[in-house]
Amino acid sequence: MTARTRRDRRQALPRIPQGLPEYNWGTAPFDQLATRRQLRALGLRPGGHDPVAVLRCKACATRPARTCTRPAYLYQVDLAKPVRPMTLAREAALDAAMAARTTCPVCRRRYHYILPLRTLGSCLECWDGTPADPSTYIAPRPTHELAA
Image (cartoon, helix red, strand yellow):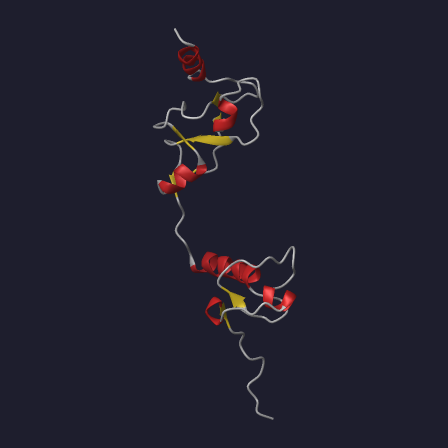
């Protein structure tokens, strides 16, 4: 028996250090447990249920004594509920949140990408004068329409 065979056999058993079973990468039962992203791909959500297991990342799976730095929580597929449909109010709230992240506070242009507002505080054109391609933003609406 090689060292690899022993390691694979040992990885298949879940470890329970903090109360939840802990699976290494690729050893969790895929038909019973899934991560949030996998549930979302199936059109499901956890539905208020707590995670039932922890999935260790690939790097930590080869080091059994190491505490995993990037664990993923696993949920039961049979307890998952369907994703709620998008309502007009949720869509408006998401659009307002994205508008805050894509609108420059200085020139009020709305870009088609997320602006570095935490680091720069504005778009590149307002920050250092780099000209922006007109196809990457939507021009701001005029504040008034009076001629005089």
